Image (cartoon, rainbow, N blue to C red; front, side, top):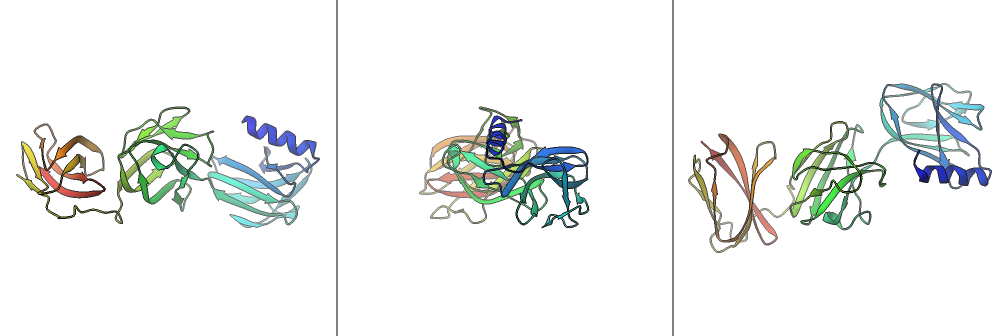
Length: 280
C-alpha cells in the first residue's frame, strides 16, 4: 500500500469518517476520503469480471444494477464489472457511484516540466489511449498513471516502441515537433506520428529527392531553405536513421536499408516536410 494512501486512511479514521470498501466478492479494497462524503479508490484492477458491492463500516452492503455508474441501495444486487482497471468513486450521502477508466498522461520537460504539466490521453476502452496535437520539445518525458508517480512508463526510444514500468529515470527523449500518439496500457506499445494539423511544409515547398527509388543514396535538396535535420522512418513509424544537417542539401546512404518504402522527415526551423522515398 502506498504511503500516501496509508496517511489518508489514518486521516479519515482520526476524523471519525465512515469506512467504505469496494467489495470484489470477498476481497475488500479500502476507499479514502477527505470530507466524509466523496470516497475514491484509484487503479482498482479486475483481472477477471467481478461482482462488486460497497461496504459501510464493515457491515452494511450497498449495491446496484447499473454499470459504469448508478445509485446504490442498501442490500442491492452486486454490480457486474468487466475486467479492466478503474478509478472508483462513491458518494456516501447520495450513494451515487462510478467506475471510470484510469488516466494515462504524458509529463516531462518535453511538454512543460515533470509533474507541472500532464497531457491527458483519451480512451474508449481503458486499454488503448490516444492523444492529438501534442507538442514536444527536444527533451525527456514519460507516461504516468493517474497524475501520480506510483506507476510510470518509459525506457524506450522515440517515436515508437514498447515502454516498461519504471521509477526514476527510464525516460523517453522526444524529437521536437507536434504529434498524434497512441499507447496500449496492456502491452506498453506506443507510437507517435506527425500531427495532421501541424505545419508540414517549408515556406517555399521546394524539397526534391533523387534518385528515388534508389539502392544506394537519397539526395535531398531544400532550395533556399536550410535543412536542420533529417529523420527516416519505416512504414511502422520506427526511426531507422536521424542526422543533424544545417545545410540546404543532405545525402543519406541507404545501402544497408531493407528494400521497401520509407518516410523522410526534413526539418527547417519550425517547419517540416515529409517525403515518401523508396529503397530498391
